[in-house]
Length: 317
Image 1 (cartoon, helix red, strand yellow):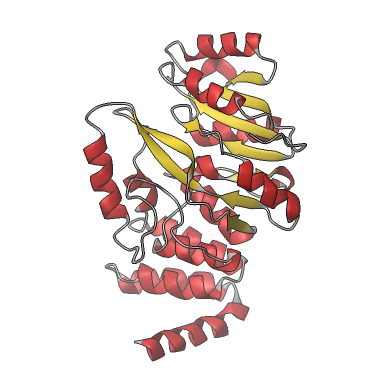
Image 2 (image 1 turned 90 degrees about the vertical axis):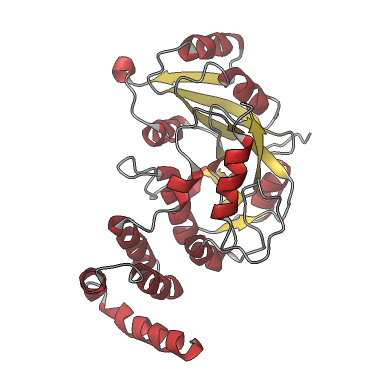
């Protein structure tokens, strides 16, 4: 274990997590670089709040926050509150039913210390099966999710980017899901990089996936090139949301329009072309093209790169 001068705030949203929360917190406390753990009780009605309060009373590194009226607001809003209360140089996230491993920050903090221009790092997530009947379902789901990945280097049940990708190309490959995807538990983010950055959008499904996509689009995010997991995701019968719902978003018109807006804003011309062609693979092409062109019309300087991209696309096909 390394002793870092730098410090990390770990943000844990917790909803009815009495079965898992103690182990999750302890997995973060094992790291000397973790100066504060901010638990946001998201309206739990079991023993979660009591357990968290007891942990906090016995360890000054642990803080517990509850929503006003002790209501349930969702993981996205809870994480936003955690970010607002964070005081450390770096921010990391952990779900209440997941665990950090002992190597969680070894590579990420080394990279972020050496390269001040890097905003965040991503790594590999393993799995921990809490219930006996969930392993087969998880493996079948991962087979489906990884069908676009031609060269697999990670075990089937792991989550991460399968190959080294340059920061400028990460957003496009996340769109294509041809190199894998990133889990929030493996991100280490420079807190200053979240200034003037829109945080989690609680109005959409899979706000953590949307957050990661925008981070890759608007900031410099790199992998540590370590294939060993730095955290494990707890798989059980009560997971809030499945990977399928998070990753498979292309059926929603608003999601693709949002991604197009991100691409236009950040001049991701390759992503613009990919989104337009992928988006119009579905039905109602005329309606969708009109919506896309209405967005492009607001950004005239992208019209020429857009049509050049279309030309290049047809030259390859």
